[in-house]
Length: 395
Image (cartoon, rainbow, N blue to C red; front, side, top):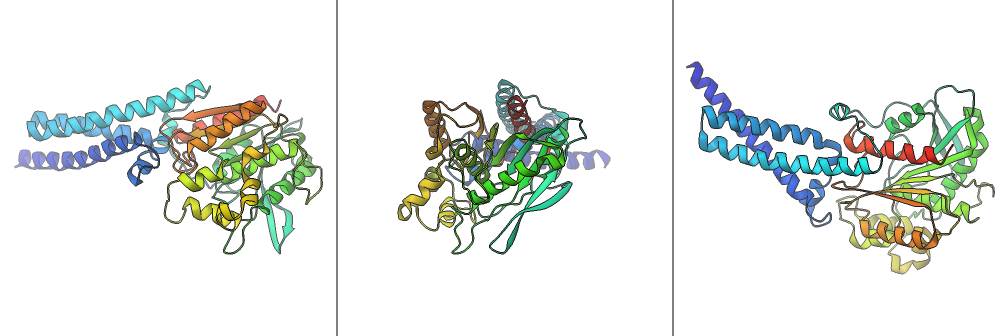
């Protein structure tokens, strides 16, 4: 009776493992498809950077159970499960190897055990929150994360969040912001006006982040920061704002709503920045509620062909000059929203102008690959590569 029960339990567990192996294999195959070829491909290219180590362990467990079932219960069923799991294991290992290879080539090391201990991205709370601008009846705030006490002023990084110009919060990546502060940065994460129904902000948001940069330069010393060493980071929509602001400041073209003393950042680091809104509009994958066409039209107030001046005003290539600050761009190879062709085209144009641009491509990664969980593989890569780059230019 005990043997029968154990046999039944093993078959049940192995059946569950077979389903798990099928899922992993499906995600592996999806990751190899073009990033905008369908929902399967989008999901398959989204999960590996944040959750890949778990998927590999799951595939290995399915493989072990399949082999155990093959030996003790059902050779045919066990062999089938083991084969599925072996394919998933091999695919998982290859994908993770390629991600790790790219990270290593960029000079990034990863704490592999930590990738299994994920944490929330939106904690802890900032050390202080201050209003840097009041406009249209609303307070725009700055979240401040203080570095450890130091006898000398420390470098400053201003962070501009993403969210398609429509959503997002200045504390949504608090885990990363605190991590940067712990590395010796005064971190200031800023709000800007988001678009809403019949309220485009293509000319408002750039003004807001310029005012934020002015405020930081005037107040950094109060928090232990060096106003002469201010870098800027941005993700997605925030990456667009960061690049455009930094390049405009270097060319003397930054919005002057809060004074003409907009400082030129010592460096810019952007993750999957929305540099080419037309390529996003035309080729981005339409995730329900976050469709690229809806985002671009909401930001500029309508279709690009109806507002050519507005689309030109937010297109980052139009800000390129040889005076642009050193720039890091991290490009997820399978980005289904900020499609890689637009980013690669910007990189080519920047090289022609003579911009000091470092482009790092991360294989088998999709948009927001770093923001799903703190300590994940993608999260460690994203924060470390930015830290190394910004440190080189903030000494």
